[in-house]
Length: 381
Image (cartoon, rainbow, N blue to C red):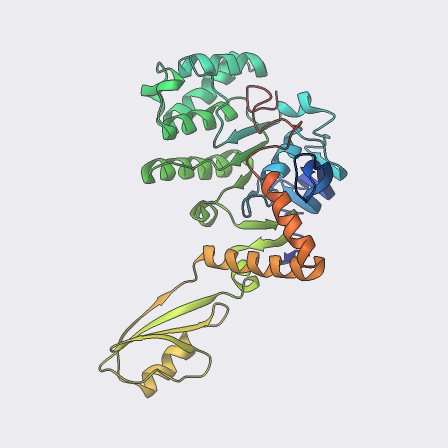
C-alpha cells in the first residue's frame, strides 16, 4: 500500500483536473519456463508475472512528477501502457481523456516520448532531416514547426549539430536531439525514461535547465523515470516510488525522507578528543579523534541538538549533512521486499524474484514490443 502525503497528490495542481488517470491498472505477462528436475525432456510450464499490480494515481496538468523504482519494478511497463504500446490486463487508464491502447494514433499527437536508451531519430540522416520527417508525421504547421525548432535549437544548443548525421552524434548530443524531436508538435504530456543516462555533467545541467523552463513556460506535464536521483531533486516537487508493480509512496521529497525513516548527520568537531557524545535525540555513529558523527531523525530540528551539545561539550565547529535520497529509497525497497517475502512465503518470493528478472524493466517479454521500437516519432505514432 502506498504511503501518501497530503491526500491525493496530483488531483489538483496547475491547470485544473488530472491529465493522467490510472485506477487499479494491472499488467500480467505469461512466461514459459522449464519445470524443475533433470534431463532434456523436462516439460515447460507457464507462469504469470505481475509487472504492474493494482496501480492507481493521477497527474494534474502542468505537474512534473518523478517516477522511480529499481530495475524490474514496473516503471517502463507503466510508460508503455501510458503511450499505448502495451495494453493493460486490467483496470482503467486515461491520458488526456483518451484510452491509450484503443486510441493510440489520436493520443500520439498529444504526447512526446523519450526513451534514454533508444533513439527516435533516423540513424543515417542529418538531425535537420529527422526533424523534417517528424514535422510531416505529426502534420505540424510550418510556422509552428519553425518556431518550436528555433526554440529547441537555442535552448539545447543544437545549432552546430543540425547538419550532422545522427550516427555521428555523441550520446549527450543525441539525447538532446531526441528531446527536441519529442517537443516539435507541442505535446501536452512528455514521458522521459532515463533522459540523462550516460550524459556528462554539463549535458545533464543543460537538459535539466531546459525541462524546468519547458514546464514553467508552457505548462507541459512531465513524467520522469530515472535512476539519477539528482534529476528528481532538481526537477520534481512530487515523487512516486514503485516496487514490484505497486505504488509504495506518492508525495513530496520531504515526506519521502519521513516515509523512509531517514536520518540527518551532525558532524561535531570538539576542542579535544572525548568519549562518544551522549545526548537525547541522537546517537553517535562514528568517532575519529576530536570529530564525532551523530545521527538523528530527518524530521527533527537540529537546533535543540546543537544547543545541548554546545552547552555540555567544548565545541569547536560543526556541520550538518542531509540524508542521501538514494539511501532513503534503498531502505524503502528493502522494507517492501521483506514485507512481500513474509506475505508470500520463501518459495513464492524466490520464484517471483526470478520471474521479474526475466520480464524486467528494459526488455519486453517474448511476444511484446520492445520500448520505443514499434514506430518512429517516440514509438507511439
